[in-house]
Amino acid sequence: MSGPGSPFSVLCMFTDHSSAEVVVRLDGVRKEYGETTALDGVSLEIRAGEAVAVMGPSGCGKSTLLNMVAGLDRPTDGTVTVHGENVGELSEKGLALYRRRRIGMVFQFFNLVDDLSALDNVALAAQLTGTPARQARRRALELFEELGIEDRARAYPAVLSGGERQRVAVARALMNRPALLLADEPTGALDSRAGEQVMDLLLDLNQIGQTLIMVTHDEHLARRCASRLVLLADGRVTGEQTLEASA
View 1: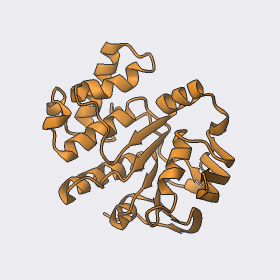
View 2 (view 1 turned 180 degrees about the vertical axis):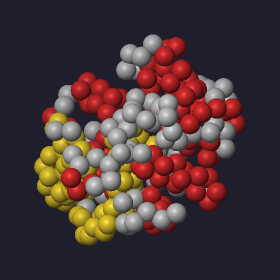
View 3 (view 1 turned 90 degrees about the vertical axis):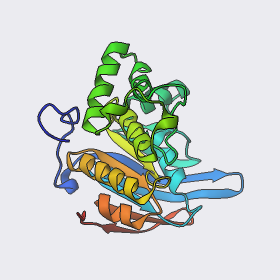
View 4 (view 1 turned 30 degrees about the vertical axis):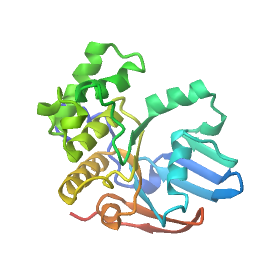
């Protein structure tokens, strides 16, 4: 995937994360929904080139944390800073532009548009930022070739396997060359074989420098793809562990 001419070649390689730029900083982030506290004073830094897995029991605040970074929700207290920009202070229009230009998102259930072909699902992400349709489709086809699904470009989501749909979703997430890729249970709806393929894909992307935050219940996914594990419980960070990626 990382050979010459690859659409991923614009990504930078980082091997020493400790000296890399801080891409994401959460500082004392608290999020309340009525009387429920989803996040309770979370502070966390993520550096360029890291792959960070966030794990913990259901309801511990994992998805809320991801939503904070994605700008899908605003903190009740504290700050979320991405590339030096306070996400919580952005207007709704500013948040939409931020998500389209800086963030790529991969969801458990793919979130593809059923009445668009796989190619159009992916190209749409670039067209929403003003990229001409022909250029967007060319970029999408390059990604399909990189991800090994070029023969499925004209197919509609309903006829794709789960693994193929998730690869389309990854292509869409990468369409605008995001600084940060967010994955919410990316293998949760897949069988074991398709799940392994998506793990390989995420690992490949990180190895060529893509910064990645994934929320998962799957310890195998975390240990296979992440360089750092962050544990959450009751809305708080309870531990961190540096991981060595396994083959």
